[in-house]
Image (cartoon, rainbow, N blue to C red):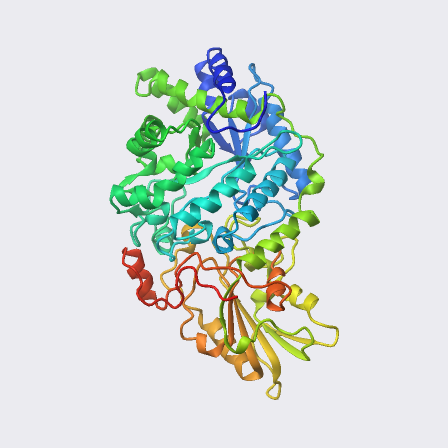
Length: 600
C-alpha cells in the first residue's frame, strides 16, 4: 500500500487494523497503548510486554550522541518489537520541535516564535520536510510537533513553542509544517506529526498552576517557585476556547493529522486528560478525528492520588496511548485489572488499539519497519543548514532603525560586539536543544551571531569583543553591537513574572553606549521583552528570537545581504502591566510595537 497520507485514514489501513485487532490478546492490545521512556526499558522487554511505542524525551539521547548511534538505538528497540508473535512494529517518538533538536550535529531551526514572524508557509513546509528527513535518518517516525498553542500571556515559559498570539497565523504556519512532515520522501517514508497540546494550553491564567503533591519526585517548593501558568487552568468560556484555541486542531484534522497530544493544563478546573467532553465528544465525534490521542509525560498521574483512578478516568475520557513513561508494568497491570473489573470496557480498548494500528499501517511501518542508513548523511547537511539560515534572517524583526543605521557597511574600521549571548550557541538555541531545558555553551555544531559578523566584515575591520562591556576609556568605535539573550529554559521553568532586561543586561548596554557612535541592540529571546527604558539608548533594535544553530544568519540582514522582512507575530508590550492587561482579555491600546510591526 502507499504510505502517502490522506485526509483521514485509508480504507485499506482500517481494514488491516480491524483484521489484526481480531487476532490480538488483551495483553497485546494494552501493550500497544503503552509508551515507555527509552532509559526505562530494554528491547527484550519491548518484546515481552508487546510495547507499542518508545520515546526519547528532551535529553533522551544515546550515551554517544550522534546520528549513527541514534539510529542504532532506535533500531534496537524496533528489532525487539518485531520479535513479538504478531510482529507489530514500534512507533518511536521524539520531541523534534525545531529540527531533530536532541541530536548533536542535526540542524536546529529557530523556535516557532521566530518562524511566526516569517509569515512564510512555503518555508515552513520545507522545514517540515527537512525535519522529517533528519528524524527518519535515525529510524524515528514520530515527532511531538507542531505546537498549535495560541499564547495569550507571554509570561508563559512555552510562548516560544507557539507561532503567534493570532489563531490565523498559527493555522497557516502549523498546517504548512504538518504538510512538510507528512510529505513522502523518495522511499515513500514520511513523519507522523503530533499536534499539541489539546486544548487551550496557551490560554491558561497566571497563578493558576496547582502543584501535584502526590507525584513521585514532585517538589512542592520548586513547582510553586517556577510554575505559575504552565500546566495551569484556562478559565475561559467555551466560545473563546473554540474561537481562539480549537480552530488549529480542526485545520490539522482537515490536513490529515493522525495524532494529537493532550495538554497538562485544565479547562474550567478539570484536567484535559479527564475531559471526556473535549477528547471524545468534541475531538473524535464532532470533529471526526480518526487518529489516536497520546498523553503528555506522566500527565495522567496528575488526575488523582490513586493510580487506578487515573488510568480508568483518562482511558474512558478518550486517551488511546499513555506516555507512562517509567512504570510501564504498573500501568499495564492496572489497565488490565480495570478491563477485567469492567471499569474500562473491551470496546474502549479495541477502539484505542484499532486507532493506533491504523496509523501504523498508514505510515507504512509494517512494510518497512527498519530504516536503512541511506539518509544519515543528510543529518545536519549543508543544504539543510542553508534553509535554517534562511529561516533565521526571515524571522528577524527590525523594531527600530533611527538614521538608517542598518544595513551596516562591511568596511567599518572598528566594531564593538558585546555580550556573551553573541558567542553562545546554547543561548541561540534555547530550550529543547540537546537537553530538555537547553543549556548555555557549545552544545552542538552551528554558527553564532558573532561568527556571522566575522564572516561579513572586510579584512581591514577590527572586531573588539567584550563579555562585560568594560572597555578602555578612549575607545570610540563607529558601531557597537550589543547582544542580550534569555538564559535557556523550557516549560514552566520559563514562567517569568517580570520580562524586563536583567540588571546585567541593562548595564551592558549602558557601558557600551558611550564607546560607539551608533549602537545596535540584538535580542535573543523566546518572547517579547520589556525594553522600553533601554530603547532610547539604541539606534537600531532587532528581535532575533531563538535562531538555533544558524544564528549567523542575523548578520545577513545586519549587513544588507538580504532585507529585513519579519513581522511581529505578538504584540510587543510597553510595560508589564500591559502583559497582565492582555492576559485578562483586554486589548492593549498603546503597545511599544503593534502586532504585525516590522521595519524593512
